[in-house]
Every structure is written in structure tokens, then in C-alpha cells.
Image (tube, rainbow, N blue to C red):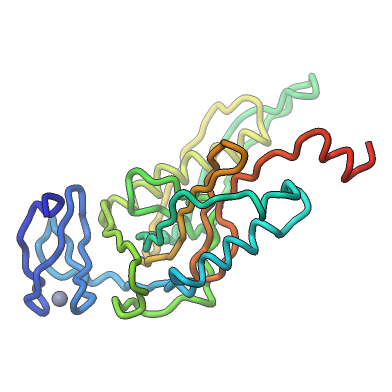
Length: 257
Ligand SMILES: [Zn+2]
């Protein structure tokens, strides 16, 4: 297996750990322990999972019902689509609970007369950071199905699922959340002000949760074009959906235009 670059044993059960290039936290497939490779010891972060409910068999039915659902899809989509690829991924995700405080000073000039604005914007966040550096997964828009969440255990996976270790550890997840939260607070303030003269944002990390979530990554073809679909493997809901445009003729039929 050329993918596996290191031979490391699990500090808990002694089983061989499957380590891939770029992995930071490796989960033992035998005892479900997490190992931080940088430290080389067991990782004690609380680990949860939203396990998949839709396995290989159930997903075909789900895709089929998705194709035929909703009136903004072409009427012949359910008959003409063809699945090109589908993969069930178990993705690492951090949820960073943080308290963020921004001291700001600026001006609102939109209406002509400049109005001075200053104050403190203080908010609590449960900010999501994906544990993979390159993924088409839309982390910001994704809602963790909390009702499906349970303690992590490898036995919760279904056959054929692709389990992905985290490529970042807790510290990096917190740092990334901090940077993104500063940007986000700035974005919120820019809606209220046209000129920002002063902005000091302090991020306090309260705690960090580590979990794995389940998603089906699907590509399908329709009338010669390829589209992407990501379905929540726990709830079956859309996470990301590319839908073919209805042709003008079809729209006229629908709306009588
Ligand atoms: Zn182990």
C-alpha cells in the first residue's frame, strides 16, 4: 500500500495505525482511540460521530427520490440521470465554542451625513472547522444533525465507508477558527459601517469538540453535463446540490409565460 507512509502502533491496543500523508490525528480502526501524531500519544479530546444511516443499498433509492423531488428540476431528470460516482465519506470536523469581542470605531456615510459609530460587538459562536485541507464539503452551510450524534466508535461505520483522519489538530483548528471569527466579526461590522477606523477583536476559546460526520459525495450526468451532489448520509438531506437548469421551453410550461 503506497499510501501508508508510517508504521505506528496504537498506544492503547497496539494495533497498527493506518497513517496517510498529511494526517494529524489518527483514529485507531480497532479500538477507536485518537492519536495526535505530533505528540505521539493518545489524544483525549472528546470524540463524537454522526454515523451514516444510508448505506450502499439505501443511497441508490435516496438519489432516485432526490432526482424526482422538487418542481425546479427538469421533468425528465429522474428518467435521464446517470450516477457517475458515489462515495460515502466520514469527515472530521471540529466545533470550536468561542466568545468573541470586538472593540470598534467607525463611520456610517451611506446617507451622506457621516455618523460616528463605536462600541463593542460581543458574540458566542459554535464555529465549524473541517479537519481536511482540500474538500468540496461546504462547511459553513452544513448543519450538524445533532439528533444523530453519538459517542465515537468505529463500529458505527457501515461497510464501504471511507474514513478520513483529521489533517489538523485541535490547536490548529482553534487558530483557524480564531482567524475566521475575526474576519466574520469584521464582515458583520462592515454591514453597519462604511469606514472602520479601529477594530480590535479578542477571541476566547471556551472548548473544542471533535466529531466525524457522514456524507455521500455523488456525481451524476444529465444531458451530457456533469453535476455534483452531496447528501447527508445520516438524514438524507441535501448538503450541496447542483441542479440542471430547466430549459426555457420547460419554464413556459411550468409558469405559463
Ligand atoms: Zn487501538
